[in-house]
Length: 358
Ligand SMILES: *Cc1c(COP(=O)(O)O)cnc(C)c1O
Image (cartoon, rainbow, N blue to C red; front, side):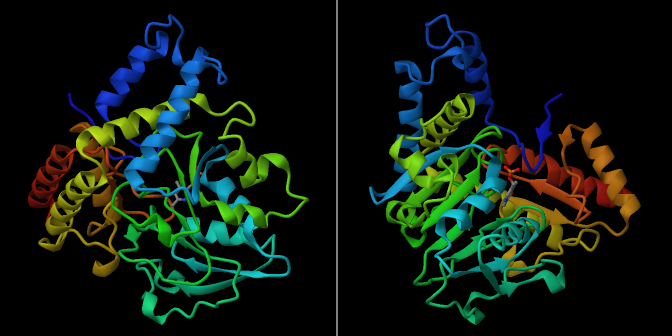
């Protein structure tokens, strides 16, 4: 049976990438060494590392003012590294609280200085991105931090605040899903396991001048400048993760780039939201203007029906549809690797399930 994996992360990867990785796992391009057995200083891995960076620069149109780094520790370590490196001495940082990950980032930042939450949708169970025109960002903040896509609550920024201070974005769950202008940001970070590859590597895109803010007491492994100066090869990097990133970005290039991927993502999410809004059975808790094109969250009339839905969907080859434990309900994560056919199969199932159970 064909299985469609709707997991939120680690999430499905393109079949073509998985097959190539399987082949090269044991014998990387005729070396008779597996990809995991190659020295990170050798010529083969250097090519992989450079290709991953080159692909990312090309796909996202990144200028030389920015460095592309591969760092371990998950997006969660970036919650710490961002304030540790970028909070100005005696300064404060501004954050938007739009979900669980945003609040975790806020918690870490408080260890390094004052945090001002200038926008929040906590009171309404994170059902939206607070309207940006009502934000009052300060010119004196060390930076402003946002979470571009809220994986758990299914909300997403459809435009970004324009501020004078560096804008920092956690893009873990929508990186490379749509075209963005990197120049609007001081720093972008994204754990790979949603849209880019396996867990274990985080993509960090940082405007180089910002790395000069780091104080003297910040340890070597936690300084952005270490990764910039050594091309992410100061110590042994997560070679497999970087290799997978190279393959996934090769795949995006082959598809025609991010604009093509974005069109497919638009079609997938529009079809799914249309199915939800045209029914009295399904209900989406996220406000229409803030809905995510990556994580589509919805509820059924009762929790019993939700449980039944998840079980029956799994029996028909659609896995990973249970919502996050803190939000409940159903969540369909439809990242870049999810084909339109997967979403169409889900919609057919939803229509059928509604008929039988309403
Ligand atoms: C998954 C996720 C994280 C956490 O990533 P880890 O790699 O597990 O630390 C952080 N932010 C967002 C938006 C996420 O989706």
